Each structure stands twice: as structure tokens, then as C-alpha cells.
Amino acid sequence: MLAQLPEAAISHRPPSGEWSVLENVRHLLFAEQAHMGRLFRERPTWSPLGFTPETMRAARKLPLAGTDDPSLAEVWAEWDRIHRQTIRRLKAMPATGTEDALTRHLRHLRAHIAVIERLGRQALM
Image (tube, rainbow, N blue to C red; front, side, top):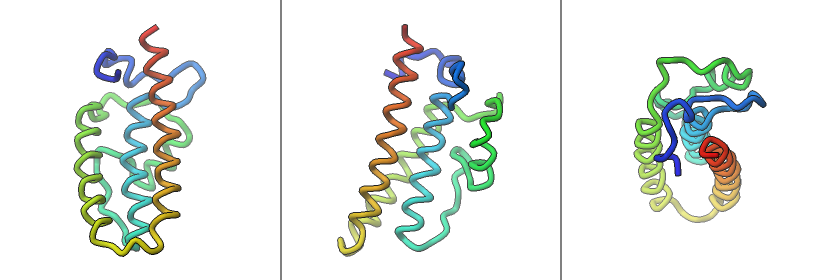
């Protein structure tokens, strides 16, 4: 569905002021690193394509999206790279103690995916 959206719709914030599709996807990249970093008990090296803890705090205030933002394809590719690393590491870990963290992370991802899908449908109307 997102491939059908014009670039302007991907970075456009709705009148409600909530995050754009691109900002939500950048947040998913941040969440993958933050949530899994806690699970692995390490501080991640933040991807420049997602948010960092500092830019996440600023993004919560919902500033206008910048013109130097990465493309949606770049952010998805980076999320996929980070996610593949996460999966490799999870497979090497004992299953004990990971279920709660993974359940919370999945719930968070699903909530943002629902927002992204809703924004995409609205843009296609």
C-alpha cells in the first residue's frame, strides 16, 4: 500500500498533527533498536535513519518534518537490516525471559503499523 503513495503523502502530517507515515516508520526503527537493546542489555548504536533518544524527545513535540529526511525506502531497508540482526541474536539466546519483552515490542509495532495503514488509506482517498 505504501508503494502507491505519492512522496508528499508519505511525509505529510495529517491535520490532527500526529506523525506522518515517514515519522512513524522512523519511530519503528528507533523502537526496534531501543526495545531490543534493553533485551540484549546494551546501548545500541543508533541508526541515522531512525530517531535517537534525543531526536525522539524532540519528535514527541511534533516539529515540522524536515526536507533532509531520509526516504521511506531507505528507512525500511535500514529497519530490515537491523531486524535481521535482531532475529539472528534472538535465535542465539535462550528463550527464557524473552517472551514478555518480545510481546511488548510486537504490540508496539502493531499499534504503529495500524496508524501507518490508516494514514495510507486516508492519503489514497
